[in-house]
Image (tube, rainbow, N blue to C red; front, side, top):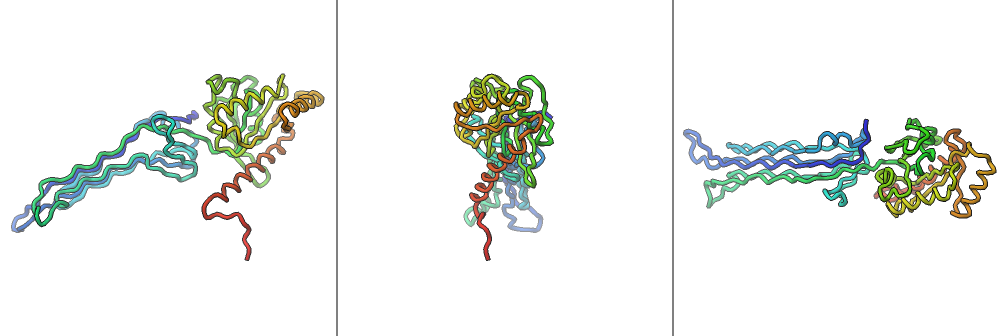
Length: 347
């Protein structure tokens, strides 16, 4: 199934049904009077986050969604039927934007979140509604109210706890395959990963979701390579794992390239907690690795971990470090929820 994380769709809610102009006319029954019924309500258009979806591919083949018009009123005070609503089912993490693709309308970050994107028109009143002591035989009724129509953008941001960042061929896909059941494409050429990949990492009795983002290159914020199109998928992550190929000529330069592109894309994303790791340590002798590690500490003033995705050396320790940051973020999130307390229960 093709990964699609952005789609433009047209939605239109249903018009309200028209009210009826009718008079009771029955033999041997006097003083019939007006008996026109009201029109029914037009259908709404809703967007709902559901389980089991991880792409917006359904909206590649159908871009127009129109709810039905409400039923028209009839004589004998019969009201028109309300139209059925239309529900657009999207993956958890989908954001809804206006036609300008900048103004956010809704953020469906949790399972079951719903948002009405277009309200159906109300039905018109029949002539029975306008009957009064001074207007005994009204001969007019209201038409139904028109529905709403708009173009919207759907943009998917994956729900992941940790994100993998790095230059192409830093070993991100190899690491994801080593720590989870995911089967990303792995090869010895750049841009092997063209779409984000997700994997569930288990650390003891706990687990978290790790996202592998296609590699960035210098100038990605200006559209070079795959650009920064997929960086939005790590905006919800609690921590970033920055992988650096230790076999490269200058690990510090590789680190600074990614940091520069992160800041250009989003200063908030660049401020997220970060774990730095030198990958592919199985390919170099220890003295050369130590020299590069010492140089990195001196120039960046940060200490990276030494791991190997191919041999899983120190990989469990790196996953535990990620889980510690994720647990802290989860506790903070639960504390912020209304009605939830993290204090211990005491009798």
